[in-house]
Image (cartoon, rainbow, N blue to C red; front, side, top):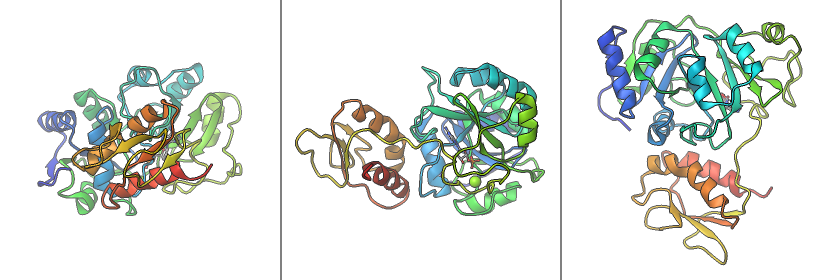
Length: 321
Ligand code: AMP
Ligand code: MG
């Protein structure tokens, strides 16, 4: 994590190049979108994505929305479809996020999707967000730029209140028109409204030419609270198929061992005990060990910093199913 002073940048060409270079170097840059200020990191860089969770102090890993500059960029990462094309033509750039199956060779960090095989992606309409995406020339993962549990920031001053010293820079382009968060539509493949937001269900249905499905537990017409991850909002959570045993100091029987610190495993989250590095490796290593078809033993992870989010996910993976 960057612990030196946070730079406040403007929107002139030089400052945009500085912000883009910081993103390229794996640093965190907050930037305005039409909804709220986002906390951006290069979505291909697992350490940078892990640093988002560390800066926000999030106690759990939620998949993040990846921001791209246009439809052509989106097609590099997800399996595009006619329905996606229709919705993108109608609502991009803008406050609509599409959840689509990841494309082979997407190159994104598994932490961005929290290990899922689908990706939430959108093209924002804020000119400064678009200018930054063009300058950085990379997919940018960005949740709201506030510490976990605090109110979403609608100005650079709000961002600095919460994250000063924890991020490399904030691009100041004045207050956001306080809008709603993006509407999230799942297309895997039937269109489902996963979160209500800036684009209305009626407008989506007009563009689709038919009605939208709703996830179980969300009666038609009941809008979800914009900031709360309602149960059932996620189609599924990644969990390994294998049995998982926590706090293991060594493998037993047929187990493969996921190591940490001085407990070296078949794969090790971080040999130096660095929790950001461990978070960056978590989903990739779980997937790889799961592929062996053997039960997974996991070394103890301290319950501090990002260790909370790592243990949250490991505890769910170990829960009887
Ligand atoms: P935020 O970035 O705070 O607007 O939150 C992103 C939202 O997108 C969260 O509610 C996630 O649960 C949701 N989300 C991100 N990726 C996926 C995905 N692959 N499938 C379903 N929901 C997703
Ligand atoms: Mg938020």
